[in-house]
Length: 187
Length: 260
Image (cartoon, rainbow over all chains, first blue to last red; front, top):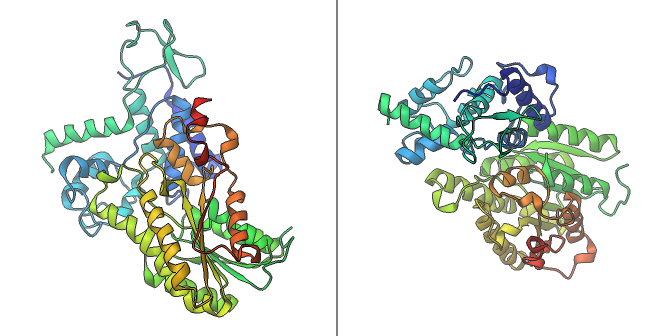
């Protein structure tokens, strides 16, 4: 369900905070369209650091693996990254559905290391939003529907005080890939 | 503030992967000891390079000498270039510290062929390229090689295929310490415990609850750096082909921490 307990603005602020903490950049320099690598100088380890910060803030699990890796696991090695580390056409089509890379031209044969430039502050906030939206209607512990938050970021059951349970980022990526495959038959 | 103790004055240390994490602590420690320091990082234009530049400035401002060179250890050409840059700048090489590492976090059986090859290219071949390329310089100086290992070389860590490469390298340490004996190059390793640096930030995502270990079992990166300095100094002359565990006793205490 689309949760309305934490406002989108707050989510964006928390994403910003997580980035500031990990990269030590100025909060002012972080715009929704900022590309984490190109504009904010993030590297692979930094992404995991940002994820960790967000997990602590919201009490959920971000995706450990990028969508390309999941595609490889689902459809076999070579399906999304070829033996030279480049993207075959079907992987590019899939990424086009997932990202709107204005500044990174998505073309078959592009290097897999370029794909990271698709990740913007906005797309990161989108992943956070997706996970929060996986909140079930009712509390799995007591069956009531009385989610609330006391600190503004951790959702808990207003009735039995159990912590909210979300799908993990990886589960959501896998769900999304399955849906895309069913519709588009890319792989 | 730097060069508080000048035991390594006019000596040159080359530390792979030293723009951040444990590598940067080792670089700082060498500078403290009066050595000229070659800081290396893999990727150009990213946050590591920026951190490496900052570290160079910090060392220069403290009265030491440091340069930052690009070095992707998995590419022999890049290693060649980095070592020759170091030679061109400082004229010699005394200490080669094999610290760089890069690996996916996944159970080993789930690694793709590409990931497996990268794992070996960086974390095994890469170190050997560095050893090969620096031998002519180390031979001249009677130099030392120190490999930075981790507990994953001997104990199970979840989603840590790097551990298998660390184990292989500890074996390379044993081999090279003998095969380079004639060239008067001393080879040893330091097997570090849990340090809260960048790669730990990654590990904690895969190893739930690890942060609940008592605080006093987490190490400061400087403790590993101090062990490296010891292995490069005269006091360690009797130690050869060994990888010292420097972990505050974590590996020795078995289940003790979890049972507390």
